[in-house]
Length: 246
Figure 1 (cartoon, rainbow, N blue to C red):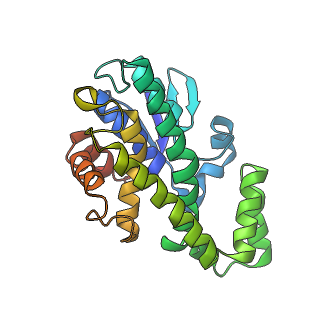
Figure 2: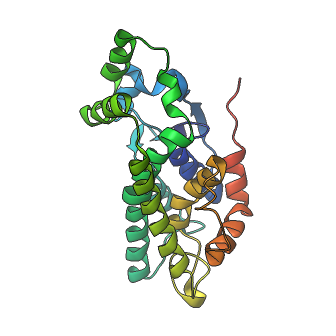
């Protein structure tokens, strides 16, 4: 039995939903309403102390962190394989996944604070209400980041820096695909992998946020071609078609 605790629009949840669709396995949906901060309720923090989605429960065993979850799914459900057979290519896959998580994702979080208007969730709250939200954060690091954003906001300089870091990764992806269709492998050995799955939801987020400078495929045509092929996959369409029940 697979149970996924996830968010409808959560990029990391989409990674897992794409992987589940690629594997063709059935799973139970436990949708979390992040706007209501259901992810910070005590029962969920007992499952995932970081208070984030997704969380996967497989036969009673709990897994957190989306990149680890999708690799676990590829090990448990072997077909079709989503990791390169060649050890070097598999190492490159891990390097890409690390870059996507620690450079791309981290800086997208800064951009989304403004682009998605996440700050609006806190407008109209008095000091006591804001403190309550801060106290409810799962970790001290999350409390610190939120406190600084509430107090100082995100400056134009912060936004420019974050978007430049994201653009660097996209430029690296464009260069990587000079001789291949997918991020891992080369030539005929290039194959769709967890690295492609890991980054795909973020590209969709750029388009949804109207980040025209990041999604101008005339500047990165190979990446644009890759993106069209990603969107055409049935697994992508299933993952992004998920809608929480009213």
